Image (cartoon, rainbow, N blue to C red; front, side, top):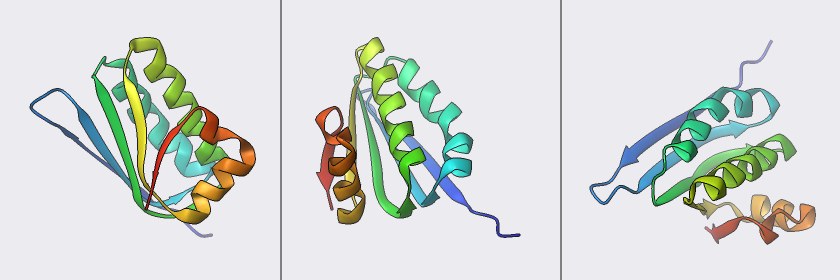
Length: 108
């Protein structure tokens, strides 16, 4: 049995913005692990939530769906949500799925 690991670190800046960093593989199982923490950050009412994905080595559709749910939560609380350091292959998958129409991406 293989265990997939994901790491989520957050930092709240003095201006109230939040930067979170994800590293590892983002799939069905790990997306469920980090969703509660990301949802809590989105619901808190920060001005900006930036999610750095430069440490992601794999992301499937469950990860992209997670980003869309977090985006919707942020939108409902008035928080601006951005994905930073998006690996090119992940950005391509988001474009194919149409997720880039809602998500703000900064490609690595």
